Image (cartoon, rainbow, N blue to C red; front, side, top):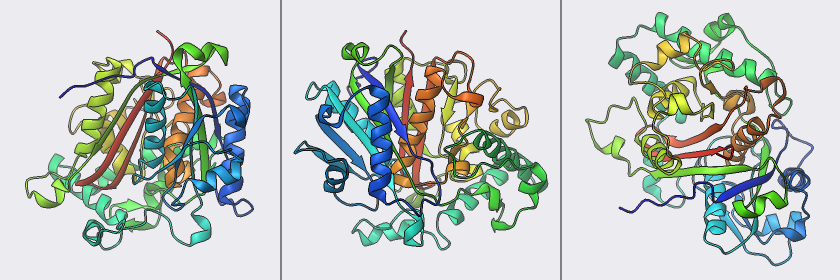
Length: 394
């Protein structure tokens, strides 16, 4: 199978992100406007400069609301929905359109308004009744709790030893979020709080689970050879990967349920495009899909940051801390932002973009050159994995 690359062909020249949270005073349209106009200002452009747009949302089923709220005049707008990878896939498709030579300047924007709807997470089914078979009783929390139990069984962990590892992940992400004014939850927690929190899905407690939030984020994308016309500190796209499962984990008794093959394949695609051979050594920071603490733990292995069964030791050694070898979720992750699905992937890119420019404030890594974002949905055993790598000019 032919494998192409868009490495260094596409540049991000502007980004915007609203404060995530219980944004009762803002509609989805208000958040679209705020995210888009921060991105416009960042790129030094006006709305009339946008030639096409990609719009990510799982709740808003049309592209027209983006045109209406941003007063975009008769340009092509494509609405994207791909489970928890919606925002990342929105960005990915916009990049491909520019790489194909169709447009010079495009907008990728994702938004979700969940708090007003009384429920979070993904809408089920997509019109396919068989898709509901993927939703276990108790929702995704049950599925990822099963992953945690399978992980403990496979690698010989007892609860009293494994729970502190999960708590360290939660503490790390809440600390990083406490440094981020755009995060929903800006309060650091202690390991004792995480350990003793109300149990949600054994062994996952309250702080092992991400919250429900509203949010929006946006990116302005152009060709790399045009980027210098917008700014000097533009950031380049190095690789994008996307893999969709066919419910293998639900159909094959041999599937271990302690990894997400879609993440493994998407990472392989992105690494090949970017020329990355040793991800733990070459990548400076990663924004990953920590919907649950166990998910982040497994993602570390799926992305090749460590070997199978080794992630708990890396966590205990602090290697994924803000000042560690490879900072994971330096902005606070889903633990601190919640998960407004259509916006999360672009929010992750916003953090990496700012880190690459040296504009991440107290969360800033020293001289980063490569950053990664990752999303995964729906449940272990079947879903969508997405990986995007952006970074400095060589």
